[in-house]
Picture (cartoon, rainbow, N blue to C red):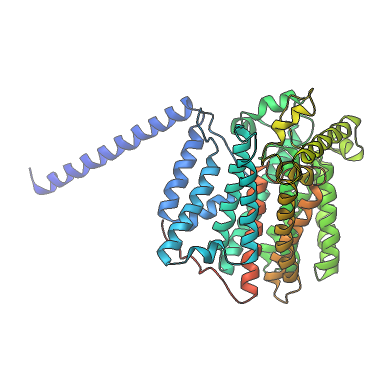
Length: 479
């Protein structure tokens, strides 16, 4: 046999081996996908893990884009939240990169009043849980885990997004992901159903909605609850509005306008009265402080008209409209009862509260007929009940620090800082207004991660505008 034929034989043999390997791998993947319901989630987790080690900035961008998702692996594991693990892994990756660069811990975890405010709130929450008589409740520990994961997201983004380019990429990803959230929510409104895909993503939610009467005409999109979706959209709308008004580039302005228009339409279909009032608050704030005012009003009115046309095309009225027009007696009586229980719990533990995340487990002793684990539907009363006067004071102080620094950015001559300043002020204001009638601050992981991420962008903008970036910019590299 000649050398040429020998080489050809080796080449054919190697190609045959590769083809067999690819074929066997494909069969195994299909078999796993069919036999294991959680296979797509496992594959997603493995893909993110590989990305984290291969290219860390891509891993961070993936976490930002996937914020609206929060799937659970339906296995008997201590932690079933894939993205809770991913967010702690994100923080661990930032820690590794900071250590490689020789950045002291205090420079990116402690420097500045806003960082101290975040740490103070997380510390008070942890101490209240440790001192609580109900700290053994599994749900309370999960609530604390969510809060700590939000804190991890905050410090990861504030350490990494040290340049305008990175901040702009993050904001674009938020706009794109929110557009997809809105489109899926509007599809739910169109077909009048949560969809099989939603319950495949969140199988635990099907019995929850069935117990509440099934489909009620209120969309959830990729989030767990209608009110959580309303809060999520209200946290994005100020950013989309500011970009549409202030950015000069036509591409990003069109993207932001589409996001603004779809968010307004999707917000309507959530049927959230608190969410609609919060949106009105953002509009009033924009009309006063987002300059140029005429362009701001014209932009919002145009987006509202397009959104209204879309709403009418999807559904002429419906249950969402009926719910927005009146307050039913059952909702009013339920809220009053939950507020009363929160007040009673606070009066028993006025200083440090009953323990972070414990309200829904202490509820039954004040409302014996209620078996469900419910939140207080009031941000302030639940914070008082769980963390006492100390916790509420730290919470209000923390948000004031971010709001005040962002408000100063709104008056900057640089549109970049004005956009981020308005985004933070709008998100904080909408959350505080919506919090009068709901508690999504900690309960919704999608909203919680988004809200802390926006606060992190506000901190980055504040330090950039003041001429001092306290945390050196992390280079793009693998962990």
